Amino acid sequence: HDAGHNSVTGHENSDFWLGVIVGNALSGVSVGWWKSTHNTHHIATNSVEDDPDIQHLPIFCFDEKLINEWSTYHEKYMSMDSIMKAMVRYQHWYFYPVLGFARFNLYIQSIIHLITTYKVVFKKQPKSSRTNIRSDWKFKASQIQWYAEVLTLFTFWALVVTLVCKLGAVNGAICLVWSHFVAGILHVQILLSHVAMDFCQDYKLSHQRSSSNHWDGTSQLAHTDDSEEVQFHEWQALSTMDILTPQCMNWFYGGLQYQLEHHLFPRLHRKNLPKLVPLIDEIMAKHNIPVKRLHFIDANLLVLRHMKRLGQLVADQDNPIGGDGTTKLAAS
Image (cartoon, rainbow, N blue to C red; front, side):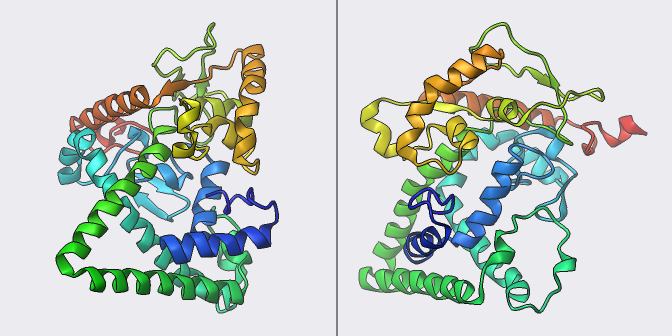
């Protein structure tokens, strides 16, 4: 994560090769894919059309406007059939089990990324064919970097196969399942900061400022036709939540608990993020912008309540929900 933001050494090339070692070879996750999807997330945080980090249909639905919306990153409509609509009613129950295996999806996405970028990197596809919002990082990768990513991903899987063979089929399977479930905590940490926050469509929303600088647990935004455009710093505060942690647990979160600070200054080294908290609070309070910070357990409960409400809302819809948030029957 930090290498992908060039915040470890501060040099893009050095951090890329560090990311190749830590991400590809040791974790099985392509640093190129990470920069492509994660940089897009930072540019378009919680945008139902553009943010790939919230587009997990049909498994999870974090906002009703995601359904039948066009994803500019994946270049497809995010649809949900009647079976998945019925299942998503229980998404708050299977949230943690799915995240326990979510890392396998990152492996798949990494491989897909390298396959889909091959033609561009090796100039077999003209640049004029780029039509989506994906980060330009994927098109800046050199042929050497592409080969390095492929080689290091192969190294990762060679190590995994070797480990499983050494442990035996049963112990190897237990090791893989347990290790990925533990790694699932990281996915929980990442999603906590955005799932129960506000979402925008067409970068417009109705913003009703609160007289208090503390979050009351309810959304202050409503999607209306005469929505108000907000500034970048304001939207980051409305779409991002910090996690309150004791100093002794900072190693556990690795700086991810300072999501608002990180989103405002994504290339800042994690050790400096705590220093920003009082400065950002002062600025946000001056302009009456709410800042949301919760303890880990409280944040989890808030996310589960949000997912339960959304799941029931989607499941109870008699008709597919259109991109404008209305049912097709109502629209007709």
